[in-house]
Length: 110
Image 1 (cartoon, rainbow, N blue to C red):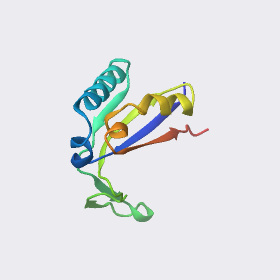
Image 2: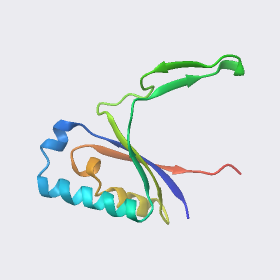
Image 3: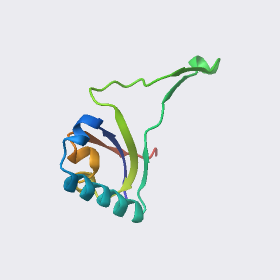
Image 4: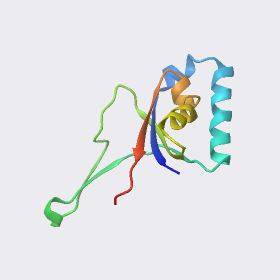
């Protein structure tokens, strides 16, 4: 079954202005996804890694990506196709609490 990487973006302001019942339903949906085997986690502090010409590892604290909303979390999901993946994440906290979720097909090298 195809796999997808999801990235949720959201902030406390958007979360707080979402009705409690909607947030509770979204968290219950996340719990069901996890029960069904979705690997899901909250975003921690990122570290950038570079190794130019495989000569010297360089690290820097902080994200490389920028967004108007902070990264809130990630998940690896399995779905029959992109439409099913979109349906799965459309009820998650970031999607319903004035944030956004990106879905990236995880393509396997041949």
